[in-house]
Image (cartoon, rainbow, N blue to C red; front, side):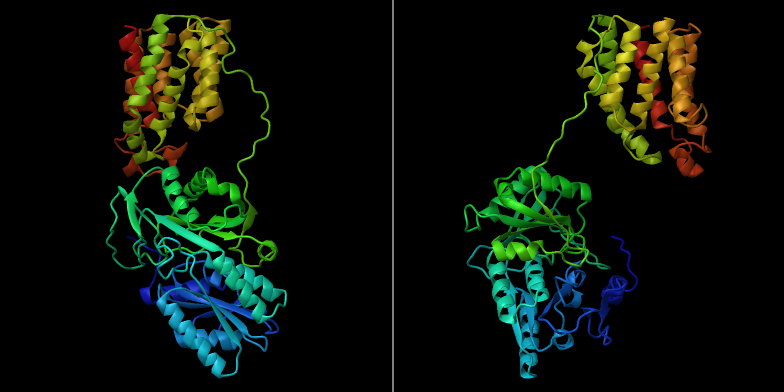
Length: 543
C-alpha cells in the first residue's frame, strides 16, 4: 500500500511540524528527542491539563491542545507510549503552583511512563494528579478496560474547568466522574495499515471486527460483514448493555478510525439514529476522525452520561479546531413546494409502445455493469447506472403513460427523466424528449421532432457531433428517421456513430478533453454505445 511519507523514522516529527503551522501552538525546543506540543499562550496561572500517548491517532492528542482543552500533549512513536522524560518535560514546562492533571489511557505503557513521570515530578515538588481512562466496554466488566475515544470527553471537561480557574482537586474529581460515566465501543471492517510497513490482514471481505482497540489489536469478536444498519445495531446493543442508567441523557462522540469516507460516516450516523439509544442523545461530537487508528476502516461510538456540571463544561466553547459539538436530533423536514405533476396527461394504451418501453428499460438495466466498466476506463464509472435508473423509472410507470399519443408521451418521458434520472445524461435526455414533444405537438413528424430535440441538447449542453458524446450516435440515427429511412437503417447509422467515437482521441469538450490519446484510443464513448444498443433494440422490436 502506498503512503504520503518521506522517511519512516521521521513520520511523527514531520507531522508535528505540520500541525505547528497553527500559530497558537508551539513545541519544546528539545524536539525531536522530546515531542511535546504546548499552548503558546500558557502562563502557568491555572491548573495544567496534560495528555498524550502513541501517535497515529490524530488529531488526538496534539490536535486538542488549546484554550478550553489540553495545555500540552506528549507524542510517542506510532502506537508507542512516549518516554518518561518526554512526559516529565511536559509536566515541568506546563505546571505552575496550582499543579497539573495527567490524563492517561489504560494501556500498560502509558500507565507506566506517565505514572513514573508523575512520581518524579512530585519528588521535584510539583503537585500532580492522574486519572486513567478505561471507557472500552467490549471486554466486559471483569477485564481491565482500554482507553478509547471517550478520553476526549475527559480532555474537554477537565480543560474547561481548568480554564475557569478551578482547583486541581475539583478538576481531578470531576474528570474521574466523567470517566465513570463514559462508555465506548468500536467496530471495523479492516485493520489499520502501518505507514511504510507491509501488513497482513486477519479479516476476509466477509468479516468485520467488533470491540477492537485503537492500535489495530484484535477485537473481542469477529462477526459476519453485513449492512450498515445491522453492524451498527450489534455495536450499540453491546454499548447499551454496559450503561447503568436507564433514562439518562447523553452526549456522543462519533469517531472515524481513519479511512471511512465522509458519506459512509453520515450513513452510519443515520444507522445510529435508528437505534433505541439515539433517543437518549442530546449532543454529538463528529462524525469525524477524532481518535483515529491511522487508516482503519472503522468507527467508534462513545457516550457520556450528563449532569448539570458536566453538560455546562461540555457546551463551553473550546479553541481546538478538531472539537466540533452540535445538538443531536432526528432528521427534520420543512414543507416542499408543489412541483408540476410528472404525469400531466391521462394514461392511454398501446401494446406495441408499452413493449418497446419495457424491453428498452430492461436492456438498460441488463447492460448497467458492462457500461459502468466501460465508463470506468474513460470517465467516472457510473454511466451504466444513470441509464439503468432511467430504464427502471420508465418501466415502473409505463401503465401511467399516454402510450397512444406520441407528442404527450414524449413530453411525459421528458418529465419523468427530469424528476427521476441522474447525471448529465439524464438531464440532457430530458431536454431532448421535452423539446421533441413540444415540436411534435406542432408538426407530428417523429424524425423531425427528435432532431429538433437533439438540437436543444446541443444548444444547452454545448457538444456537437465529433465531440465524443452520445450525440455521435443520436444525430445520425435521428437524421435517418427524419429522412424516412427504416428503423434498421437508423440503428445502423447510430452504430456507425458509436463505433466512430473509438477513433476520436482529441476533443476540447467534456470529460474526454481531460484524457490522453492513449486512454481514449479504441474505447467507444459509453453514452454513444448505449444509444446504439437502444436503436438496435427498437429496430428488432419494430422491423
